[in-house]
Length: 533
Ligand code: HEM
Image 1 (cartoon, rainbow, N blue to C red):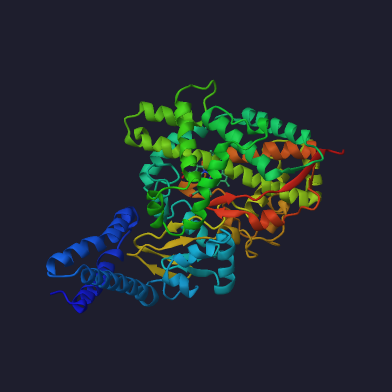
Image 2 (image 1 turned 180 degrees about the vertical axis):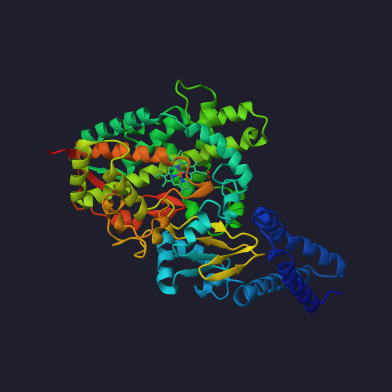
């Protein structure tokens, strides 16, 4: 006879031992769906077992006993996890909100309202100091020296579990955690970026953008949307050999809509990598399905024709067709890299452009200095123009809350503290806050392009400036992105006057932009008009 007491004890013992024997060791995100299925179906199995073992048992009794066994298991599992996290975890001495020590769920709940992870991280640093425990297993570290240690070439830190699950079932360059495999795939991508001349194509799209802004001269336009059209069209052309023609139609392609809806849930669920596969296994919101379908369509269509001028996909498709190397020929790479190129090739530059033009509208003296420079030269060496771009990327980085990395198995130094090896800790440098560190930038909150040119003394510690990340995993599209930004900024500034639309300022942009791993940039009402000489 199984008494309620014996079942409760058995559940409690199993709860503690499954924590200490299994959950506390290693990573379990890849098994998340299986574990979730076991957890949700085991009450039925236990019910049947109790009914058999406990004859004659009424259904009510068997149900009660099942509930006792399950609840005592879950209660003791949770109690064991929380006790460990509060009293025994290697991060227990680091300051941070009490709820963050217990669970990352509190983090997710805080994001539900505004998806403003970077602002919340900044507030936590103001409250708790330079190193904050922002999750049971996670530290946000606002110390300049940490940047090369976590991200720099030769860093022993690796990408966290999030990278494994966010693109499932596909693979992609950015999401690959194994360094050797990543390096092999990076070589395939390198061919698409080495010595390719994409500038003339970019200039064509910039001219279309300017024509459209001229056609709307004196009227309010949502600059954020038009820069999105530009970057999406450029990405379509350079990656898939065909523009999406949004600049021509002036309308949002459903692909852009799908991308934005597909990325939105990430802003909320990101802090819980184990929950991502479970979320993906459930029926997906229409937006996400549309995003996947849109992305798949691009590569299927692209495979059917060979563009006149090679595009980024030319090299990735060639690798899939021609190689015996599994890293090149596994079709999951092409599906995943297609999604990657759509995200990183479009949202990134449009976000940077929107912030550049927000600052130009706010501080007209910068525009005058740009005119002066661009009247004399327009080359990649235009120092002030490059300074404007750097300042926008410093104050409004693409990945606002920081790139998540894992400490090596042998442990690592965090500030002055050594974190023991054996358990992998997630670490990040909060990019948005780091860009505003007074110890690294003189008058850090001010937009001062000259700090990157004629007044280098305004940069006190250049090591923290890493808008394109550093080392092995740094942005492969950096030079392309900078060229896209220079081409459009130089052309608009020399041809059009720029102002905020009447009654509009920066409020929406700064308060409504969402942190969804990259940025979902809020509208920016501006007026462009022919330049008064
Ligand atoms: C202003 C524009 C851009 C910024 C600020 C930017 C920034 C970044 C950052 C921070 C990463 C590292 C992500 C991580 O470690 O998880 C990254 C990776 C990457 N970016 Fe960019 N990016 C920009 C534009 C582009 C463009 C236009 C492309 C080209 C299509 C591109 C392609 C990539 C790729 C493929 C990776 C993955 C590299 C790897 O893991 O080896 N990016 N980018």
